[in-house]
Length: 306
Image (cartoon, rainbow, N blue to C red; front, side):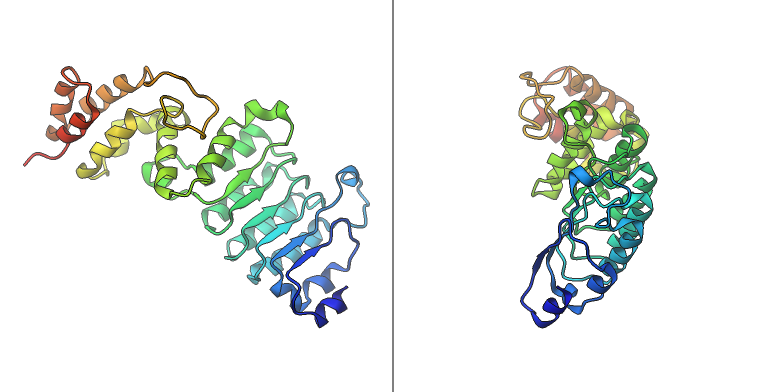
């Protein structure tokens, strides 16, 4: 097969699923640099076999990582069910920091644990090309693995700047396909839907609202907004009175929807915001809360005074 690839320069896609091959020879073939799609997936029913000769394992993952780091034309790579383990996955994650072409990567069912989470967190923070990453069907725990990866890579809620600088391009899958895991991956589903949007501004908007109301309620503390320019306060006030799942805000983002137009928390939070942000320009807003329900009027009065 490798000899055939050497004589053919038109090959762009290769399927090597459940194929025993000399990986070093294949990886070092010059025509590999021109491929755009490679399917090297294993077999589900044989994935538990320790001595399956078709698995690439951690040593093979190291070779593939070296190949990815050379930034080939490859757009899609499927390495599912190959017993890569966290050790091999770390090598691949490190290569993603240098790769600017790969858009889709599957490492499904590779015996990965939360030990590889820091490596993929770092990779996603430094890669804006990857559009999908499948880590499903592995042994990554929910609290110490999946949730940490989502929070630190896709929606870092330590500050507003951290949210803006999070990864907004990659659709991440860490859960199994079984429905029994649905309750554990609500946040994952929301992040998938958000990062699938076309507008980066809307992605950040949804993530800020989720952070304020559920992911990190401490972010709502007035001191968190000390560095926000005063001219942006009206927009921030608008976000404070929104909650995903209420009204039409967040349709298609979350499964937690309600027919109520307003969350019972929004008015309380808006009042808390304008009373605790101790700036003269926002004092008018606290008065207006008692006299008007118009958000447009609130935004107008929140503008700086001359």
